[in-house]
Every structure is written in structure tokens, then in C-alpha cells.
Length: 333
Image (cartoon, rainbow, N blue to C red; front, side, top):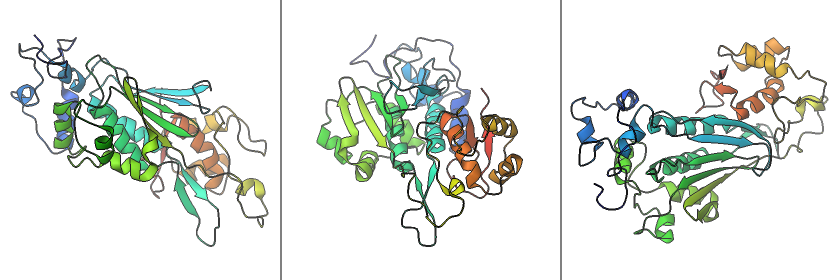
């Protein structure tokens, strides 16, 4: 019998035979050891009558829930959808990590030649910390009891993160903006704090507001939408003194599907396939350049970045995109 409003703790799982190998591994990675004989009670994974609850289902090896990240070539869902990745059907702690890592993969560093004096700056496509906070909040505050999942959508100019549910009854919009902590899923919030994924200080929303303002939050009927806008650099400001303008003009990949050539010098379309085949094992950018017959990294980036944006190539060090040890590997489908 359920007591009170439906919650992760009093809503029974639809599935009886749940396994938790991924959960144990995740805790071990965080330096915490779960005990086989007590973890169900300690994490409150059972209903009053001893059955697995919805929290147990979410933390199991397969919650039977899709968590999708779709990418569109334009600014609306009317534009062609050129990639969709499913990060569900695994412990939601792992799903969350993979969604955040995927965002890091999409966060392409852009060469900023504007007002360049000596050193060229690199500008990221969007704020990494704001995206991370929005992603974590979408997982921890999502209304999971009906097996609805947060939705992640990438457009040409932004990423939208939509979590199901509204702010709790004891919360207000002003309190929400200030970072007042009123958890939607109390036990799940406690686990996130225990695993050092989030904290009690409630700094997540204020961090996003500090970077982008309150207007990136939209309170819709039945959901909360967070928009992470892109800081795109216009592909116009380059030095007029270069001899090879084809080489020094940044490539606009905003509307370029991966199977379309993006070079203006008659480069074959199969360059993408060459890169995908070559990177079946992780390769550095200079290795890729040598394979293609180029001498400089920037000649390769105009092909790598569309592949990364589509999720067909991944960085081996996604949290440090400019690392000198960075390599690129094809994502097998």
C-alpha cells in the first residue's frame, strides 16, 4: 500500500528481478563500499511490504527507461535530426555521467581571431559548468515515478534540457532562483550528496543564472526547461594578410551534415569515412593529419568537429579538449 503522494520510495518497481552490479562499481569508483547484505535497506530500495521500489529500479543495471539526446541541424525540431543517442537502460548514475560527458564532447573549442594581437584565444561553445549543473538537476529533480525521463536536445544555437515535473509545493520561483534546496526526490538527492555529485549548498541554479540569466529557465505545464545557449564565433574575422585564405578561414559547421564536404578546395566527401576507419583505434590529431596528407592541425579540425558533434568520433580526454595527449576514437554503432 502506498502512503502519501507517489514517490520513488513508495512506488513499486514494475520489475522483480533487478541486479545492481553497476551500482556497486559506481560506489567503488567514489571510494565507498556497499555491503551486499545491507545495501537495500541502507539505500531504501524496498517498499513497506519488501518489494523493490522505483528508486531500486532506477539504480538497477537496467531500469527499462530511455534517456535520449537528440541533435538537430537547425534551430527547431522541424530541421533534420542528424543524430540521436540513447543513454538509458543502465543505472541512472552512469546514464547521468554519460550524458554530461557527451555534452563535453559537443563543447567544441573555437579559435577566436577577433582582435588578435599575438596569442589566439579559444572560446568554448557553451559554459561547461552551467551545462553540468543543469544536467545533474535534470536527473535528481526529475519526476521518475511514471518512468518518464529528462530530455536532452541539441540545436544549432543551444542545448535544451527538460525535466519532467514542476517545482515542489514548498518551493517558490524566487527560492528556486536563489538556490533554496527543496528536493523533489529526497532520497535520490541524499545519494547524490553522498556520492559527491551534488551538494547541499544549492549553488547549481545560481551558477547557471550567473552565467546566462534567469531567462534560460522556463516553467512549462508539467516540466522545467533549461536552455544553454551557444557562444558561436562568426566565421568572418580573419587576418587580411594571409596568403592562403582557404586554409585560414574557419569552417562554418552549423548546418553541415557529416556526409557533406565542408572544404572549398574540392576535398572528397569520403574524407569523413577515412577518418572514421583510421580512428578505429585512438589516434592523435597529427596522426590523422599525416594520414590525410595535411601538415597542420587546423586542416583536420574542420572534418573532426562535425564528426564529434554527431557523436561518431569521441575525445579520449573529453574534460580537457585541448590536452596535448588528446586522441580521437570512432564510436562503434
